[in-house]
Length: 359
Image: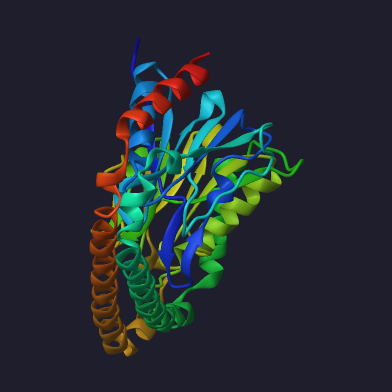
């Protein structure tokens, strides 16, 4: 049996608005056959459980979505098996998930049943203090990200002044005609929103190579605030007007700014490429946003743009270092739990749950 294919996504992110969740877009209650919400403390084996489940289902030929944690991209917040309508989710903070239709769709896997409570309570003070410090450090990181985004907005304002909007509108219309010209306007389509990239303890991380796998990929090359999203938003709206399903992938810094777009039914995708997220996907057509800029305006503000870029990179570096500090404390927090977990019971839970899915 051939192995299933894997896509890697981020359902949540560390953004300029704080932690931002697109968890509601992982799967709808109507689509789902079963949503397993895993509850338990740090280090109890939630991510390992989901990785094992994913590997098992992939070996059986099922395609998967691995939903990564933005605060530790080597860890999972979820696994989705689309063909079965089955999802496993980490239901703990900061992305608290609770069953919406218990028994009918959702159920809780309580890993708290598998720990030695007395051993954990012996570290009560350390756990409370470490958890409090993690929250404080993340709040500082989000302030840095907010400051970085303010600088981004400064550059975006300059590029907006330089942008030839008439030509961008004409180009957008041509793209829409080329891609969607044969599809009539009709019933409203659907949109799924996610992140393809994240700001993690390991720096900038993206999984575009597993997402941009369509037959045609249009690339928009730009920089800090060069407005590729204006074109993407027009294409997205046109696709939805024509009844198509689209996957919208948003900026890791600003979760309302569209960075990448997939239209699976047409086997086409659109991606933004810059120094913060690149990919190795085969590109059908590439557009440099600088071609739509008034060079005289850019020349007049050249020093400002360069200074903004320098300051943005500096503040982002501090923000990412701060997120890394929070990760180190989270690793420390896990040491209070790991020795007190009965992993053999989690193994039995795994086998029982796998048997239910396969049945």
